Length: 368
Image (cartoon, rainbow, N blue to C red):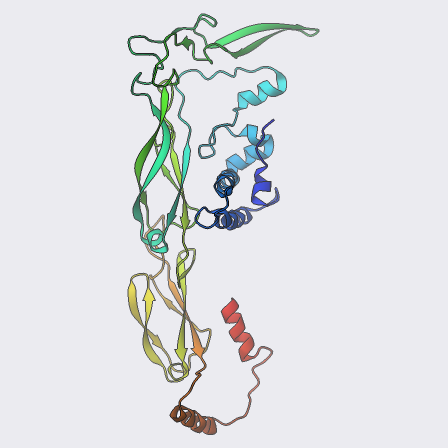
C-alpha cells in the first residue's frame, strides 16, 4: 500500500471538487508555502507535495485513474513522480498474475522545476536560465551499463526472454504464472562487468543549465513543457520531459484577471466636475485618458488592447481604469472661501439616492 498522502487531503478539497475549486486551492497553498515566502524548514517538501497533487487532479485522465485506483493507477506521468506502479502491477498485486515485464527501450522519467517571474515577464515573455539535476546517459559506457571492452550477455535464468514461467496447481486446475525475471529485471540481458562510473545503471546524475523560453501571456500556475529534458531513457529509450511550473509575482498597482488588467486612479473634485485630460500608466507606458465632466466615483474607462497578450491567438486584452474622486483635506483659506461660495450656489438640500447612499456605493467600489 502506498505511503503517499491523499491528493484531495493535501489540497484541502473534497472528491467532488470542480476544476476551479482545485485551482483556487492550489494557488492559495502555493502562495502560502512558496520558499520565497515561507521560511519554515518543511516548506520545500510541502510545496513539492502540493504541486504533485495539483498536477494529477488538474488533469482529467490522471484524476480519473487516481479516483479509480489511487496512487497505483498513475503510471509515472505526474511530472516526474516516478514511484507509481503500472497497470500490470495492479493486477499482479490483486490477483497474483500478470506479465509485469518491461522489455526493450524505456522512456526516461519526467521532471519538474519551479520558476518565479515578475508581472512584466509573464505579460511580455522572457528567456530564463535554470539549473536542473537530471539522470543523463553515462558517457563512460554509452548507456550499456557494461565496462568498456565488455558488453551485456544473455540472461541464463530466462534465456533472454525477460520472463520466468511457473505452473501453479489448484483445485481448479493448473495455472501458468508469468513474471518478470528477477535476475535481469525483464531485459533478457545481464551485465557481468558493470561500468565503474554508473555501476551498471546506465545513467549518472548531473546538473544541466537550460534556457527556458516563456511565451507572452502566461499566468500564475502555467506549466511549460521542455521536450526531452527529463531523465535519460534506458536501453535506448527516449528521454522524458521537463515541466516548468510558473509563479507570477503580484504587481504594485496593476491587477490581472484572465487577459484584462485593472487599475484604480484618484482624481480631485474639480477634475471630476469639470472634466480633464490626464495620463495613466499602461503596460506599454503612459497614455492620455479623457475624464468627462460629471465623472462619478466608481466609473470605469476601458483602454482597448492595453491588456495581456493572448497565449493561443493574436491580440491582447484590455485595461480597465476605475476612477475614485478624492475629498479634499487641509484646504487653504482661499480654497475654503471658494468652496463656501460654491456651496451657496449649489444649495444645501439633500437629494435622496435610493436604498444605497454615496458611502455605500463607495464602499462597494473599493471592496469589489
